[in-house]
Image (cartoon, rainbow, N blue to C red; front, top):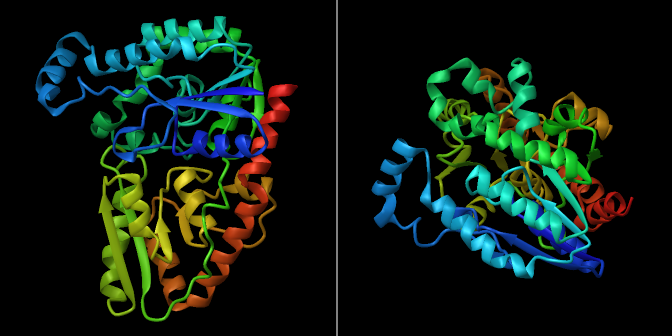
Length: 378
């Protein structure tokens, strides 16, 4: 099959491409490199000229007055010029409802161009989309990345972009996807409940993880337990970083000679990975029901990850022994869990082994690629 993947979200499409390619399919990934994360892509439509620091002040001024970001227009234009190369694919999959990251009207225009020149179209529900946002707003008690906003709307600046999905021009994109696309696929349990009532909902497929690339080395704790916290300034509140920071302050004072704490803030993905490789414990995020790609990647390497592991996750996979730690916005709880691991290092090693086994069984990129093929061919 000829497969076109549009957009990237935490290496999901990169990993899927690797699995599909190994199965003998021709796969093209067109995406931006997501700024500081620097993801790989076959065709990169990221804005280059208007995202330059020289244009930052005029861009912000124009955005405040006209609600128009010229860098996003450049992104759409760059994508437009790739269109002649994006025809006649058997399957096209968009990573979410805003895969191109241009203006709403331009996004829909480009989406329609892709629709007219290819066979089957699918969309992933990963990150925020209209259905997910609507579900979270209607179910405020549900564990979600919007809970910090509901609890303190003053943090609205970080969440402003999410509510763009309620914009009337974006709703047109959502309706077009519902009416014209062959299916919508949820990438983890945070998106299942919100999308399962859509008429073209195609089901849930876990994130693919390239287990060949991610080498598992059994954890060895010879001196100190190493705890890693990676921060992105754009998702600080969404991931509950403040709770992790407070917990680490207590842990540092309580176990000063037994722990080494590494904290990094908004660094490129390769640097992030290099710095966290020596860690035994990774603090990922706490407003999710399932694991995102960063957590899965760390689990594949045998690390103990504080992330989402709510009932829907444990029940679906029939988890009887912990493969990760379910993180919640409770400093005392986080300190208790971290303290237990520090005082029982053999449990760190045991959870790390189970984490790797779980990834190999449920997230292996070849197995996941086959699941996508089953849905696309159905």
